[in-house]
Image (cartoon, one colour):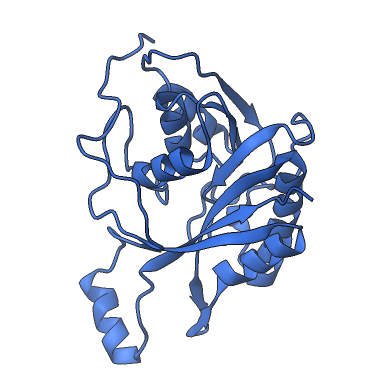
Length: 252
């Protein structure tokens, strides 16, 4: 497939400087598309990469999904390792990287479980950024891939597996470097489940320290008239925010 000549950035972009982020209109530069359900906005990845890494660094997205992180890493001259258990996600990422840039960034794409990335050496990575599934809210492989964490319905079981991921990310990340995780919450039996904070606790248990807790406002959610009416009738609020945690692996 021939490489494309594309617009390599937004028309106007300013680095976020507060703990609340909101992007009502998703960026559509380069090969970004919004049709991979649940992928994060290019603005999120761009902000994280610019703030927590430098050109030539080696990044890791261990659940690459729709390829957003890979696109931004290539544009911003960062090397990146892209991991996913879903072959469809990996093929999409490869296609999304078929555009030209004037730098020497490299991309490594592997089918692998984020809980055991043995091909990555200890302290090889300069910056981790990823957007895991939120239990089985979106079933990316519809139960066909056993190692897909989006198949797990039980919140506590999901959090247990996310702790395994956290330990592996701690292993591959260099000391003093950062790990960014975007997580949302859910409801079960009409009660609010603080999934994000449960996951955060496991990252702290794995050895990370928490540098930032960014509240990201959600847009384009399926808050249809049906759910708005249900919210009023059953007296519950629609969840319209996520937590973007920035962890650090301390020097000692």
